[in-house]
Length: 543
Ligand SMILES: *[C@@H]1O[C@H](CO)[C@@H](O)[C@H](O)[C@H]1NC(C)=O
Ligand SMILES: *[C@@H]1O[C@H](CO)[C@@H](O)[C@H](O)[C@H]1NC(C)=O
Ligand SMILES: *[C@@H]1O[C@H](CO)[C@@H](O)[C@H](O)[C@H]1NC(C)=O
Ligand SMILES: *[C@@H]1O[C@H](CO)[C@@H](O)[C@H](O)[C@H]1NC(C)=O
Ligand SMILES: *[C@@H]1O[C@H](CO)[C@@H](O)[C@H](O)[C@H]1NC(C)=O
Ligand SMILES: *[C@@H]1O[C@H](CO)[C@@H](O)[C@H](O)[C@H]1NC(C)=O
Image 1 (spheres, helix red, strand yellow):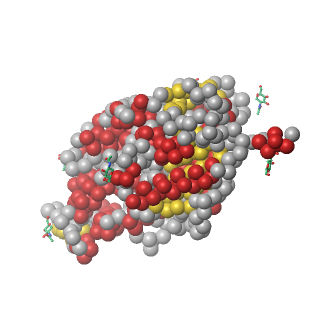
Image 2: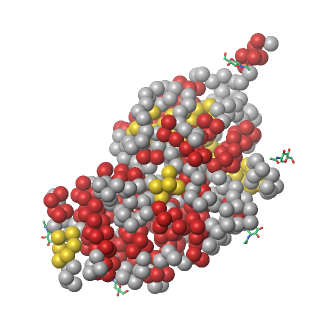
Image 3: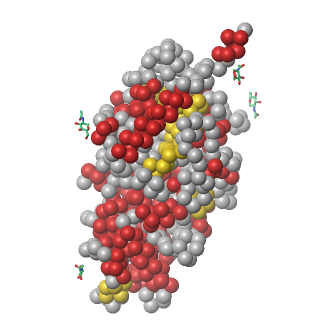
């Protein structure tokens, strides 16, 4: 019950450590349907009690212009940030360690300042820890609604400049010393989307950002993100992975067959759903729980393992995957498929019980053809934020694999047209802004893409991270590089999504690979800081 509640909250408010891109990790109209279904049964409270210890850090705000560049508005907003001075040693050129909140409420990141990477680095350096909330997320909201026009200041350029403006000008309450950049060395940390931002900050603002760590930083933006599922297929329990591949083959084949088409939807209790794409897009949802795996059970989620256990039933051998079963209505399917159907339907077995939680018609719950459903724009519709970034600059539509030879764990009916249509539905042209016909990923990728690099920019990734294909550690597209102190390049064995971000108060209780990455991060940040000189220091001495 507790896990169910935590999971529901994290899905809504992205307020849990493992969440971030997870709120809408498969951007599509169906994700919004499911977001809304879950919103009915869970309370999304921005400042809920999940992080009681972390909540003791005081919150402050910094005034930012909504538009840094083009004078389109005089409006400002209050950007939230939280500060930890528990390790701060004044007068020592100690750094500010800032963690970028990314596409979630900053409250969800506070635990990293208590026992995670911010605390670890602040402790090792005598520095100040900061969590900085991203514009439009949490309470750092400067508009009254999320219409297309009002979202036009939610883009990379504006949000990166927020961080720069903050670093140049912030005055921390209770600290007399001037800790602004570049007079003080700032170490910028981010995980996932915020990891890409961390790399972008180092490249775009080298004078302000002394050092940066991009953890699971998705520096490659892409229209299709089919590789996400391919990573999961590769690393999941082999029987589970094979069951998924076989199940999807059977479903896709049945949908092409006039005789079997209706029976296969009926097996999932989804006969009432007209569109086959709407049907198969429900089936992919439980797979996203892979991303929530974490080495710390208090942070992570076992939903993916629970799903696999349900799918595998009593199978203990890969050969079992090939077994078929004959159902009462005469349909013959692979043995795992009825388990899959039961998992999707059943209200008691899991946290992804959509079908049973639908109290309206199936079309009303899971249909995606009614545009008006995606045009509610009041500020409680927080799904509109990351989706807008997806639709304008990032992409990441989780399509089936492009090659028929690549095994698939999601239906091949999930193509770009189907997944992208939500962009057109949700963001009709405004008076001042229209979204591009397809996301314009070029501005992200020109900043370095898989090859992004700079001195004192660390690239940290997880071997089994479904986002790894979009990072400089992409096993599909990136070139190998050396791992040096100046340009650390580290892949955490067995890790999923930014597993270095969280930590334990008792670090010796962390798994060895997590202790190791934390120690390495401390070591290279300490080494970097030895090279810090206040700007103008040599000039002054010469005068
Ligand atoms: C914006 O306004 C300021 C002051 O009014 C002016 O200095 C600046 O040139 C303007 N910028 C643009 C891009 O119009
Ligand atoms: C949205 O909010 C803005 C102010 O941020 C307001 O001017 C505008 O009228 C609102 N639009 C709608 C359609 O409610
Ligand atoms: C399937 O749907 C029917 C009709 O909506 C309902 O009576 C039945 O209980 C559902 N089956 C399951 C397993 O939930
Ligand atoms: C697994 O369970 C199914 C039905 O639930 C049964 O028919 C089958 O014999 C079982 N297989 C093994 C290996 O126990
Ligand atoms: C810290 O963790 C280690 C390893 O699990 C354990 O042996 C030790 O007792 C713990 N220390 C404290 C203070 O809890
Ligand atoms: C300080 O020295 C460095 C390297 O010697 C040089 O690149 C930099 O321009 C100097 N700074 C100033 C302000 O003169």
